[in-house]
Image (cartoon, rainbow, N blue to C red):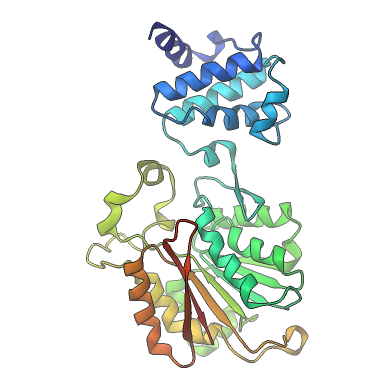
Length: 334
């Protein structure tokens, strides 16, 4: 117990009085694990944070074991202690390191973007199950955030192009940065736009705003957590991640299913998913799909009922389940 108290005193002391630079990576790592454990955090987070604090950053936290005997420098010490302090307060690791892996690709993230979850990969997987690799697809990603869904899909289809829209201009800056990082900027564009506005557009207004429409694929991962379920959200998510990307609206208490944005998409989806393509990007596929994430079985049933009004032009095909067999997405097709 005395050892733990002394480490916490070190952590809370001014950074110029903390000295890890004469200590081996192994010793620094063990101290950090103890600090995190004492604060109720996962001690293994220390490996990830130290791997990112070293200069140059270690490509894998497991690679730290190849450097256990080397010493931590002053600059690395400063970075690492900053990371540990932030993690002790509950800040997600992805925001501390500035990156998150999704679809085996690394994406830049910050507090303006929702942290990509592996659960959402079922949407990209659904596309790959519907079209061959050489398909010339036009993809619209509504609520693109970091761009992880759109860019992951484009990575699977070298002849595809895409448009990502979002209401947050700062999130779009991150998406553009991610597109450049993955050398996909020539095949995609990003635009600040609100789905609520799109749903009220006339045919002419829609054509003017989306000259590249119609699209073959719509990806849709909206804020869908009802305010009535706010208490169920993990504290770290609630404190640090953008509520704009989590909750459909601030006055959604009486909407038990968080359907606000699904209703907006339902009003415009058929106009965005057309069957006529321009000659230069015409595909041999007449099928268009809308692939959307949902948060629960109850919500899935509500969304299916909402989109049933569009049959037979748009028909429900299947429910998508995540790795834990939870309802995670819905696939509709023309």
